[in-house]
Length: 472
Image: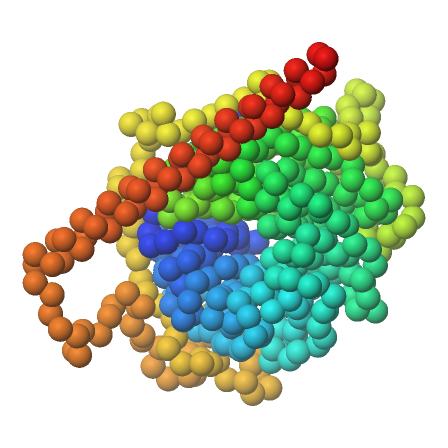
């Protein structure tokens, strides 16, 4: 098994990165959202241009490519959802989706529906064409952090600050089952590619996987020492990637039920992770404003025990007995059905896991934005709808090569502040302010490191107390 390798490193956002997604039709393109209110379209090819999409009035919490790759959806603290054409024109249409911040956006696999969840405690489904509201799910009693479609689009899973995870039937709009989290709430949930399991990253530093057929917890990991902010299944279903406030990424082998890698790359909390569609790359984003793009490598050997996608039973067969098989069953490789045998807390495999620390190798690391200066073009819209809502709106939305019909698209970046009515600052004041900002940034990072170390110390003390109690 080869180790993951850092391929690219971007730093052009001006605040914490909250969300990442790979373009489905290419390895060379990704989108990120940030608390700086912008989206970045990243080129993973050297000497290519990046695009900053400007349009939201507040923090961007979630970004997502449509299945075709012709659209990007973004949800923001400004309570709005934008649908962007990921091209140099930066065309977008916007609609107010909720009465609170929009925490998550997700496309159905057919690309026709859009799912949004919000701090207003609701989940809503919209048509992508004309952004028509379809229905709302309202049983959560606190912020809804995340909501995702199942791979076949028939189910929805959601997690909330009310410490529940709910499974919904899209056809009846009814809640089919509720999983309860007594020790914390989940920051993110995701369906396994087979559609038969769901995983979540929790504020209590744990990672959990449930079987939606048996409605039982089948895997439970406690390898992080701070809140788990994001999770992502590898497309082959054999691995799970996590990002945590303890500044690490972790990779779990789900077939063997153990941690296999701990990656140190972010200087502060890691906030979001995503795999490419083929699974050969993954990306991470953090509070340090960096996007790290990694070559997966470790999944190469998984071809010998990869789950046979033709044998998956989809979530449409919820409640039915599902048969899983492995291409390497003749070699006695474990299959995903063995997950049912590992529901207990797993926290002792850290010593066996491979550790990769790129921070120690920083002097050897070729920083992409340093070695190859990244050209950034600001694109976006200052008006509410840059795309006609006529009957041809859908065609306009999904055709990124179509000429613009909405007039002049040239807009100003949010950072290009109009200074005509602002008093001029003296050089001394500007220098002082810059120094204060730098000191605050250093202080913030120091506090984050101290918090992480304190959490690790507390965890170690609990472990020692547990061992002492067992001896007695």
